[in-house]
Structure formats: C-alpha cells, structure tokens
Length: 459
Image 1 (cartoon, rainbow, N blue to C red):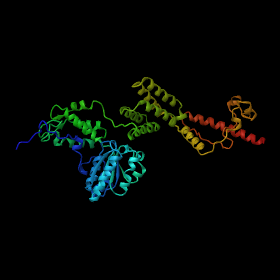
Image 2: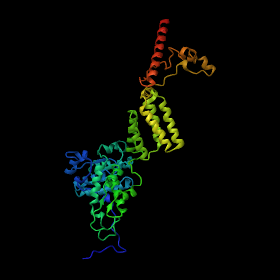
Image 3: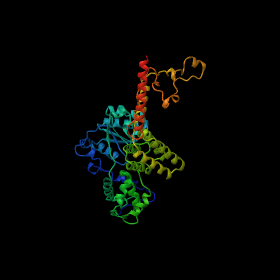
Image 4: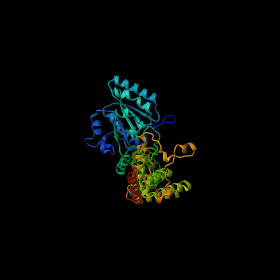
C-alpha cells in the first residue's frame, strides 16, 4: 500500500525540537542528579510511590527540571497543566485552578507546573496558596534563581525545594550518544514534509571521535543547549557523519552559562573575592577570566576589586587601594583589552598582598555603636566657634591644637562625647604596614595613660 505524502495544501507535521523528542520517560534515562534520584533518596521514593507533594526544582538551565516535573505527574497519573511565568498572569492562574477543580470532582489529582516561577510577582505567587493548601492542585515550580530570595516565604513553606546540579561533561556525552540513536534524526516522518535534518531512510548518524566531547564542553552543563547544538550541527553535515568541521561552523564562539544578576553571576564574583582573600592569585585569575569570558562588564569587576582592597587588605598595604583605583581608571579610559590587563594586575597584587580586615571590622563596629546609642552632644572643647556667641559659650575654649605640642599629639585629650566611654574599634593586625601602625598606637596609648595619671595626681 502506497504511503500518502503531504500534498501542496496539507499542513506539514509540526516540528518538535530534538531536546523534546528524546526527553526521558523513565528515571533510569535521567542523566545526573544522583543526590536526588539515587536509591533511597526522597525524590526518587516520591516518584516511585506516587505520593505527591508540592515542590520547587531549583537549578541551572538544562538540568532536567521540566523532565522531572513530568515524571512526578506521570507517577500518579495526575492531570498536567503547564504555565510559563514569563507569558502568564493571574488570569491564566485562575483558569488553571478552575481546570484543577473540575479534575478534582472526577477524583483526579492535578499538577500545576510553573516554569521560571521566580518571574511571578508577590500577588501572583499568593494566588496559588489557598489552592495548594486545600489540595485542589499539586504545585511544582521551576527556577534558576535562589528560591529563598525570589519566592514568597508562604509559598516556600508549602513546597519542598530540590536543588539540581549542573550536568557533567560525561552526563551530557551520554545524552548526546542516546540522541544519535533517535530514528527521527535520519528520516522524515511519513505523511510529512522532509525533516530539517534530511531524509535518509534508516540512517543512524555517526559522530567523529571527540565531537560529542566538544559539544558537551561548549554546553557548559546545559543538556538542552547541547542537544540544540547537535541538532543544528547535523543540518550542516555534508555526509552521514558529524565532523569537527561541521561543529566548528555551528559553535563559532563559546557558549557560557552566565546570567548577570542571577545566581551564577553572584556565585562567580563570590569565588573571585574569596580567592583574593585567600591569597590564591591563580584561582582569582581563573574566576576573573570566567566572568570576562561570560560577558561580564569589566567595570563591575573593577568596582568589586576596589571593595576587596579596602575590605581584605586595608592598611596592611594601602597601595592595594591605589592600584585598584588605577585599574578602574585604565578600564574606563582605554577599555578592552588594556583595561582587562590592568584589572588582572590589581587582582594579582591584592591576592599576594598582606591581608587585614581590621578597618572593615572597625567600621562595622562603629556603625553598630552609633545605631544602638542616642545622639550624643559634641563636647564643648571640640565645637567650632565661628561667632561671638559661640565663643562666649566656651566653644573650643579648652581645645589643644595637636600641631603645637611635641610629636603633634595632645596626650590625654578626649575626642569621644562626654557621655561615651572611649571605645577601641580599630585593632590593627601584625601584618604588613599595620604592624607599624599597631606599634604607633601602643605608643600613643601609653602617652594618654601617663597624661591621665598625671591629671589624677594634680586633682
């Protein structure tokens, strides 16, 4: 019997991306996430038992959030409703709730899956709560952002959070190998127009050695991206094999997982800062290169390097702050690549410089002291006397001008408010220049103590 092919006025079969065509249907086919899906792990037990609860899948793109959500729904034959927080609003949420109520009257559970749930505002997130509470629906959210920062505490209290990890290159190679076995890669569906990947009946595509590893590396832990790269590369192949040349045409430039303002962005700047603080210039340069490679604005990094100079080096080596500011200035004036090199120079210097957070701690302590105390008056001897009335009131009368005394220091003179006991905020370390600062402060303190004793004796 002849197969009827699509005619001129017949709609072609809809195109389905490779990532969707080979989406795993069973746990055994899911790559990675052993910490959640290993034997005896809570998520695996829930899926196998079909005992559902509301949950949040949190993890980078392409790690299986949607796939696992579908498995959760399928495990108990629940009705599936999917929304995207980017495209949906309260109207769509209400419609989903009405649909879930109808299913409930038929004795069937409903799973409402919301992709990128962090994009919903507070009122939209609140709209789920009563229906999750009364069992109308099982809520599953997927997000790439930290739920603790992006989701309402009320919603979080009703849903368990499962953290998904980036897939390893080995995991992604396995997914790509399985994709090459997909029959739709080598043939067109009967009754449809030719598939974009070509029409060669019963062909199984082969990949040149090392090609899948290159795709896995470029995908940076994202299985969906890897499959998209593979699918595009296959359209460019000259024969039945996928070669490095085919792949090079597709990649063009590297693909990096980097989202300004997202978790990955802040995790990487945190790693850079901690590497500098930990005196590891090589690791610091690595994270700096990762951020630049991912498209981060060098001026943002320059600003953070200035912060590092004050917070983690401080007066142990004051040159660090000047060098950081100079690097910022070079980036502002010259741009890339000269500015990037200047920032790298500052990062290396800060990494190997003597470390001290004494100024940082002192500033925090002073702020806390002021915040927790009343507004105390400026002592009379420290007040300015710009007018005759101020002079008549004694402003500045007993002030001793430090430069008129030996060593430009006035022993025993107080600078705190009268009702505020002198408090030590700044405690220099014994590292770098601060060792000399500490020695000077000990000497000045001895002069103050001696002056106070002499004043007590005179009284």
